[in-house]
Image 1: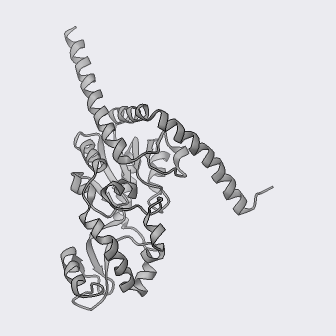
Image 2: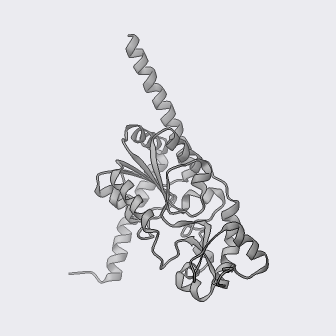
Image 3: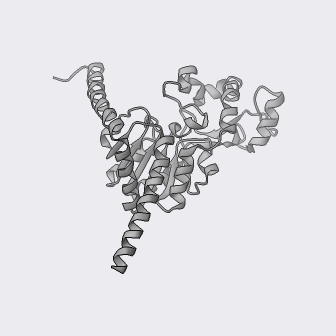
Length: 292
């Protein structure tokens, strides 16, 4: 007999919750061991890629969306839909003013810096991010794919002329919302809204990186936004090992090889330290073997 949809959904979540509780306990007991395993996986990987979400930037003072202190606990997610913006640009920009300062003043945290360090060391080949804050680039990451755009550029909803952030700042000093000098149309950040398709070129590049990688680090993402959530699935289908580091459990935890429910800013710098320590030890061992 098939369960009613709501009961079926409840049953699935109960099974997942029981499994999450077990994993949480294991990770707290064996956090250092799990971190060392991640470091070893990076060293042994051929092509490792990072996939990052809002949880990556929480320690930079930018709230995530769905966590205990997330934006959607304070604001209605409707404010970030394309249909809402089209009808109420002034209301959207009221919301944008309130969170914009945090986004623009934010600085890279230890997680961003650690990821940039891993790229510089040659272990991370690409960073695929859902974030629009530009903090990966500010931390020094080079090969960054922004699948949800960014807040550095703004586009007129009518004539599609693009403006930079300085123009928008000037407009917001005197106007309720920034508008186009040419046609008077409202300006929208070139970040992906709900009901809006992400940039196709970015999604295609991200999918290609997911197909190529043999290891993917999923950092600070709840994996509920589509089509972004498809990227780790693509990596899994193509045989990649998966590591997820996120404060909250996700529906995808069971598919991952290592699950760590902890702050990314705590875990990733330790991963870097272990990678450095292990590679030094390996080089020393090889040197000793050479002279023995």
